[in-house]
Amino acid sequence: MKVSKPRGTRDFLPEETARRRNVENIMRQVVTKWGYKEVITPTFEHLELFTLKSGEGVVGELYNFSDKGNRNMTLRPELTAPVMRMYVNEMQAMSRPLKLFYFENCFRYERPQKGRFREFWQFGVEVIGSNRADADAEIIALATNMIEAAGIKGDLHVGHLGIIRHILKDTEDEQKSKIMRLVDKKDDEGLDNYFEEINAPAELRRNLLELICLSGSDAIAKAREILGDIEEIDKFEELLTLLDAYEIDYNVDLSIARGLDYYTGMVFEIYAEGLGAQNQVCGGGAYQLISLFGGGDVPSTGFGVGFDRIMEICEIQPPKENKVVIVATDDTRTDAIKVATKMRNELTVYIDIMKRNFKTQLSHANNIEADYAVIVGKKEIESGKLTVKNMQSGEQLQLAIEEAIQLIKSN
Image 1 (cartoon, one colour):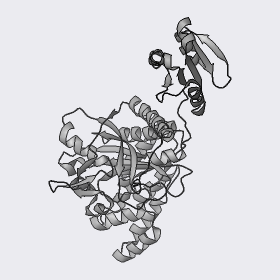
Image 2: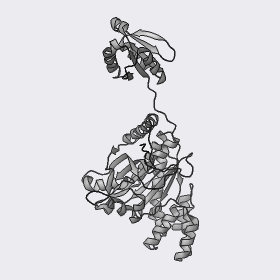
Image 3: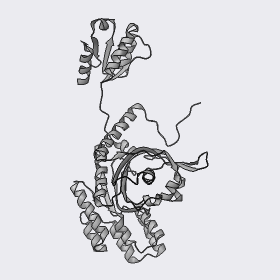
Image 4: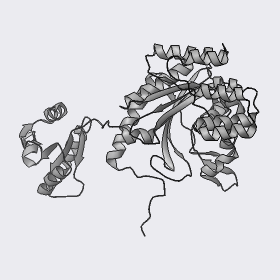
């Protein structure tokens, strides 16, 4: 019976796997040079971890289950909550700020569509312990650096939730959360209808709508005209000054919102061309989650990169390595193994494991597009020199093993 892969999942064949690993490693090199350390959390967690963070409504989006001890568990849908849980469990005594990153698969039970899968990969970064603009700016700069290292030109939008929440400071919490969700979804009609439903003051409507339309270099000045000299605008202006020091191109976008109350200040999103409607490749912000999981009042800032979306438009290919095939006869198989073993210290080497004859081994080398065939026959063993055949040009040379290695490495 043929068994298919589960809906919303993918198989990655060798070529695509090599491409993904290459981009992953490029991004890893960037984040480690910024002083961040990798962490790994369990693939499944207690369901409560995510309902505490996102509410009971999130359960319908999860791969949740009861284990054999009747405990409510779920495959992780994201990694911020597990990292905050890990901090509370095991890292509270460590020196701050903690600078952490992760690259893992996540799971959501939703309808698969272009750019959205039930199993997907997330590259994320968290700074724990700083509520300063310096931490926010570093997080944004790191995110843009990682995206650019993957060969993608991102369009960075930066906002500040504290400014929007200042307008809503006298609004009931439930109403405030719904307004933030509607703003985040860019649902102008829904926002107008909800304002009517709750009979929102005209000044609040006018100020909020003006604020979320602000963009460009004069956005700060216009925000001050609407709200006055409030602390939240000062903090946002400090952040933008630091982003200028990083020489980052950005768009002020006060329409970026989050419907969840634990987001506290800076928020940002990065968009890329070539992805259609689902064009956000990175998002992040400042938040307070640790107290929700039993820790202290510790601030955090972080972001997540949608790695699958990055791979849809990334054109970077793995560096090419010369592929070498050892060709031997029945009489020289053990000698060929010794040659292959020595060459593998520095080269990618294939050796026949099908007991093919000499001619078929050469044909196989051609089929797999080998760059070189290294012939180990009786004549080669007696002379101490290998026959090295360039599979493209057909040129053959008689070389000692070290000479053969150096020739192949240099081409």
